[in-house]
Image 1 (cartoon, rainbow, N blue to C red):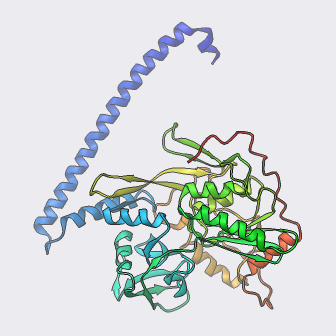
Image 2 (image 1 turned 60 degrees about the horizontal axis):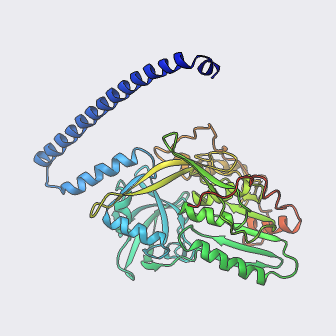
Image 3 (image 1 turned 135 degrees about the vertical axis):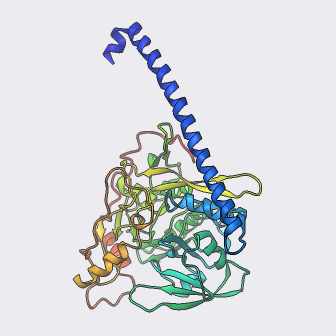
Length: 450
């Protein structure tokens, strides 16, 4: 910097020369890249034409091209995909909070349809489908190897129509589950009072979540008996959803300051999202429950409350999805593209991509032994963000902790129904989940509203 100020004329001359050379290099490089792309498109057209002319049977060209598009996007990362017009419409309906289907969040892995999480109160949840299950057939017809969107289409259909899915689960023989399609109106927020402790469960982050949360918080306030010892915020098996909803939810528990930041490919593609002024529980101690099914928007909330020292996190390491997808409409009749456009970071600047959110208090839901480590390793290798094909690398080098037996797990004579919840309530009643400095990172006023 001193050389620029001490020799401004020479510096300006060098800068001009450098810019000129750089501009020429960039233009030449862009032209070369375009030429290479056109060559590849010509190759694709040749392959398609030869396949049309010589394949053993006729095939639908539109379907073949769509499969090629999906293959290209899937090679980038597991969350980028093409949405045909029907899928695009369904996605818009789903994020509004009501849609038809089975009530199940799925992803693709190694040609299989893998269950991320069944939604509470839906056909999938009632039928006993679990996180980590693999679906291999619908009505006896294999869906192995199908693009995820095609497999999902087969699960959809008229409300009231039955179907059977074949489930592959670790440790048991494949089995069929009978389901009936319903209009899915997931209960996105549930609440109750556990004596002097409030309990709120958020099942997904859509356009209805914030309104439902506000109602649940008011109800909890009224139902809690005696002195309010604290709140359990249950985000277990919450597959995520809308970024905006996660920011609004976090805003209910912090007083301004950063919730999350995102960084894209270009230097200018950076945004900082601050809490909106909507604090409802500013001083109540909070325990957030997470598990391997807590992903995306759920991890944004947990990470923000953890970094802001507003809550303690309890459970087991979360899924580890640290990326943000943008839906890019392609024009009338063309559908849309869901594309990973940025990574997100917690208020402390952490990327949890692949690594997940580690709990402050590690608590297992069931009792485990050293013999279960092999099963834990198998599950970790199949049911985490880092295990998905083409998953983004964590650019900060953070890695998921290897499978191990948690330090706290139910005793052999435990008779309760939910050990993690019981431990969260006990922690709050013991006064070991103090709210901390909720304003510690709130020096900058809220300036961004997504």
